[in-house]
Image (cartoon, rainbow, N blue to C red; front, side, top):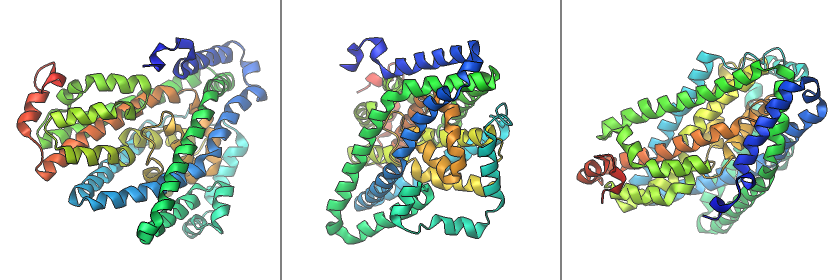
Length: 425
């Protein structure tokens, strides 16, 4: 409630929106000034601050994620079923993002106008990189070197190996796993500090983008926002809707049942803000307490449909904006890397931008500067990411409850019937 009493101009969300508007106006009215290096440095500096923390955050979230897998297995088949469901649906979300990105070919308005040196670096690297080289490049010369170079694929490999090594230690590894989780919380707290500079970065990025690329850039960025909302909406209506229908309930009635929580998520851009209310309402819908207690928290690390759609769609946008078409190998890399980097990003406002940075860096470091293209509009997409993640976890819990035979269908029917479904006891 304290955040709600703050004056509007003290809210980061409002500050970023004002900065975006001012940046767009500045870029439109004074393009020569807005295209200056010092304006570009505002956005690039913020991106560098984000990139600074990527390696440690990926290490902590992946190692912690492996520990969560162990916890899920301990509770038996419910955890295993939940994980299987999460990975299948998450893969659908990633693939849909790639499909829409390839069909719409957004970002072409920037093509040919982006930094020529960055494009040359990307194309030269892609042209001389064989499949064997790609596999060898994933293996770091040293663990410290992977973090020092910021090579996310190498960091991911080391993190996975380290996580499974801790699992092998059993109880002896528990203190270290706890330390890694605490370090992860500290790194996200660091990102919280960095995010205070978001209005400055958003102003610089938007002003430079409009000043250098013209008003057409606004249309292209608006197209990306529209495509993301449309893709997420179709994913909820068709993919999650089909899953819901197969389970025996209507997705739109389910959304009406959660309308209050969806508004909370919309306002905070974080699906974790409504977690307690979601768990309570799912139990009132007839899901067993044990299934809700396992699936919902686990889903916040493993079932991030909105984040997955965002990463694949935006990565293709940025690559095309920089004048490059990602081939099948690079798109396969996006699928694998995004599946890992998205873990643990659901409950942290703005974390989707961090996972995007990690994905771009893993696909090709030369693409990372392209984050400045979408920095100014990321806030408009964060709400949709959070909403899609939130809805996906609610559907997943009902599905796993039904799969386990622990769903009271009479309560489900009663809870979803009528306009005031959320009030059903």
